[in-house]
View 1 (cartoon, rainbow, N blue to C red):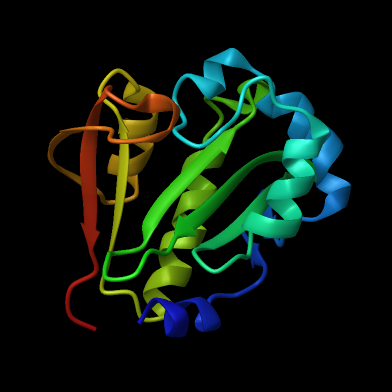
View 2: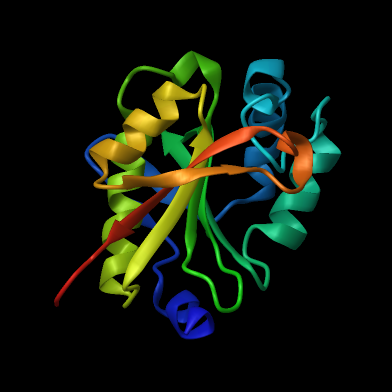
Length: 177
């Protein structure tokens, strides 16, 4: 199902203030500036630190629209402010993940972009989505709750830079169509 879902997701999404677009090499310089932030690294399981342009180039060319990812760059007035995507692993629900550059926190951009991605996933045929956030990351947990995700239990991250840390698992059921 994930391959079919991926084929039905739109390359670009537009909201009142944002455009979610296919990640491009033109986004890499700003991506590297924003992602090279210890506060962001500390809450994401798959973000290297320090973060250099080479990491952004690898993300754009090999990961963003790779076999198990469907990512969007979040753009405000044409400027890269963060990323959002669905991690598409076989036999698992699509997992919503995202990050915003710290100067863009607290302005509703994650919720606005998340609403667009949730709506696109639902329209593409997803039955439900999953996500997770550090127990200590109340900001991200609140964004997910605003999108309709419910907390379903705690777990310990098994891999990545957050290995061994306590996570809140969350799920969004779309229900009947």
